[in-house]
Image (cartoon, rainbow, N blue to C red):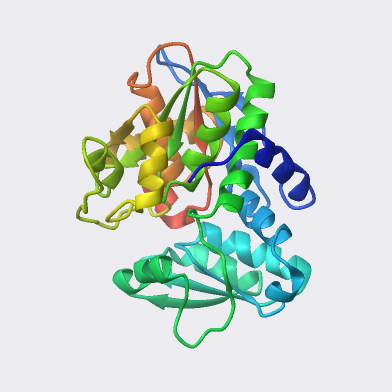
Amino acid sequence: MSITAAQAQEARQNIVSAAVRTPLIRCNADTPANLYLKLENLQPIGSFKIRGAANVMARTPRERLARGVLTASAGNMAQGVAFCARRIGVSATIIAPDTAPATKIRAVERMGGRVIQVPFAEWWRTFETRSYPGIDATFIHAFDDPDVMAGNGTIALELLEDLPDLDAVVIPWGGGGLSCGIAAVLRELARVRIYAAEIETAAPLAASLAGEPRQVEYRPSFVDGIGSKMVFPGMFDAARKLLDGSLVVTLTEAADAVRMVAERNRIIIEGAAACAVAAGLSGRAGPGKIVAIVSGGNIDLDKFAQLVS
């Protein structure tokens, strides 16, 4: 599954009333890396997920939306769907893993979303079946959907306008919709290196790229916005064609990135975003102008205080 720059351009018009154009700034790090931060944590819901949610709902017939919408999410897509559903006056039900941080669950509920927390395996099954027993609503997939990916691809359009001579982009890998959406547009319009960023406690893409999709052990951590036990086959096929590899960072590296960005740039980022920053700072993305996609900032403040103290 892949998308085109034309689809991203259309999505840009579809999401203009919901999402904002986020800034691209220099990372104030004392390292040789010439690193830039794309601040999706400044979206109205604190995450890039609003782009895909807004686009897919704009392209879904109103009679289907009237039944309500359903998604599976650890928190950020849940907020994107709940936010957009409230704007158009329909109900939103969220299937979340029981490991989802309380701060993200509370945010969904503030937006009027109904949250059902389930064990991780049951949550993952919702992605696969695109449904949940007893709920008759239109399912919005968090990543495996061309309209969601086109919404994410709008980030690539902004990057090329703000930094046309960029050399590489590092993107947090969760389900792959962000990485592959951005990468598809960049591959069509520019020549850049494109890497996924994963965390050591759940890095199925890195384990799979050498051959075929593999299942890995998943261990919960403060990096809750990315990480799973496997890669969806369709997303794996796209990743092999679009990405130059996956850069896996340690929990220590991710925590250090959270602290560094808070101290040097005065910006709060969540664990998933910190993986991209850490990978960019490591030098493994190569030389030149490197952009780390700061995918979100929805970290529990008590956890953030622990990480930066």
